[in-house]
Image (cartoon, rainbow, N blue to C red; front, side, top):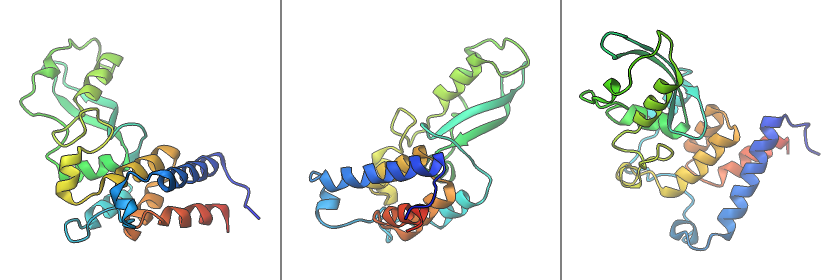
Amino acid sequence: MYNLLSARETKLVNAIDKLISELDKDKTNDQIAKGDYRLYDEEKFDPTGWLDALRSGNYKQGIGHLCVVNDAEIDQDTASVLSMDCSYCCLGVLLDITSNGWFDEDSSVLYEIEPQEDEFDINYRWMFNEMLHNAYDDGQGTLIGYEYADEMGLFEIAQTVLSSMNDAGATFEEIASVIEANDIRSIIDLANQIKGI
């Protein structure tokens, strides 16, 4: 018998069920076809820093993009960023702790849009989201670039599974438990735990 699930839990369980079904049908994925269900190569990738960051409470969770600027304080005279409030996908947290950051310090993009007010307006939000790519993302700000992920030892399937979980409402703690298990099939355990079976 299932527990009464919240809207978030229902959405997450449905997303996990759909993901499992798609993975079962995907005979083209060499990794799954070989029976390898790992998210990362443990000889190349140590997830400790990522797990710590996800569990730290220092990152606000977001969906759809690696990192989205919600608000920012901008020096009106120099158009430089004084502080930012961002939301991160679980993969954005990894990129934030492993790369050189989200901005090119020498970028003149900050000067391309004239500040309208002392407030963070829609023009700045668009500008920052355009800039919130870094040298290691997929060029659209939604996944880590495959070359960089491969270099780190993070398998392609991990990005599919983890970004789907993130966008379906899994908490950073739930995602961290799957990363820690280093087994895609652990999402089944998570779904069953949520269902109370």
